[in-house]
Length: 480
Image 1 (cartoon, rainbow, N blue to C red):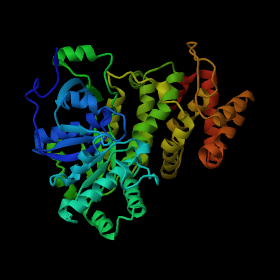
Image 2 (cartoon, rainbow, N blue to C red; image 1 turned 135 degrees about the vertical axis):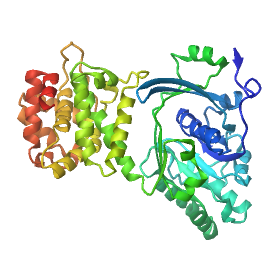
Image 3 (cartoon, rainbow, N blue to C red; image 1 turned 30 degrees about the horizontal axis):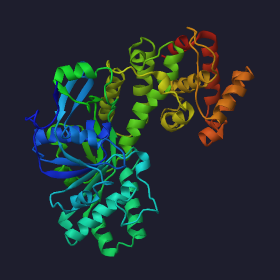
Image 4 (cartoon, one colour; image 1 turned 180 degrees about the vertical axis):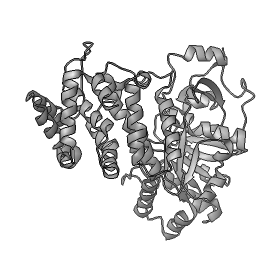
């Protein structure tokens, strides 16, 4: 089998270096670099990426060994049709380790064509470390390295504002751009880099909040031999991902002209505010996940896809998503319905066996952030409690009782010890009224006493009683 490099794959193209990318992991390669590949192919974007390894140990040696070529394997449903595609991504020109090639890293700032900085350094990556110094080679934190790079560019081009950089962080933090910008300001102050540089950064450069969404399982261990046989390359950096992709960028429309993803038919949105899209994802993807999991599991179903396809639980998921949570959001309804249908296609992915138990870790805190706001808004707007969301909470409470399922499978809840102890003590009373009241009164979970929500305590008790007496499936049927 051929090694994968630019000699054995002469069809791989070369483009001008215009993007600096902090991070070389699966997500960026299957999401951002795949998007840039499509922009090059379909929108004449004509750009390549220089990858900077953000920590001392990483994967750039593997990337460089393959001349930075690799394949993305997209799997999933597209408008109901199963897709399983393989594409060779050729957009990374080179990969650098700033810990061993610091001058080459800083010299990226001297390249006049450089225009974009993109990052995914994990949620912990955007932090201020006061131990970082300007003369460190390199600074330990990602924002420290970025500030070094920006300062070098400012000096090289004498504060020329046309040499601005457009910065898109992809870390999974709400308003990640705001946080990164604040941290850069901290370094400017900490290192005394001066008002001129601060003004140049403020007026010339743009740091924009983004929301990214694509499930990326990563290296396909169980399929790799078949994939290598199919592509006829010894590619050790294949990355698997779902078909769905969404990149929401909180930036003015002139930025979208420089980054013409829409011309490539990609699901990349430039919007005035990321907040409603963040809320939509949390509400319509994470919210249903949180309640479908205990309902499905206690109905004897272990896989998300099987839950969606079940005659009863599938209708429950549809009810929660489209009749309850969707009604609490403030984006155009047709847009929300389209997003909800995309989410259902993702849940139904025939290539991913997503275990419902893997979603149920820390279910109470998840319900508090993902479902409780929807429950309150629904009550406010409709004058009644949403039965599906109420049942979801009753199912979580029942799951935390432990014991065995009808098929003798062991129920093993997992959460903070304080929550585990509370549920154990409440269930030991054998009184569902006390269980309902005790869980809803736990201010350390909810930040308030949920017994004050009109009708909620009685509704939870009724669902708990029904699950004990009739089982989960019959209880679900009762609310459909």
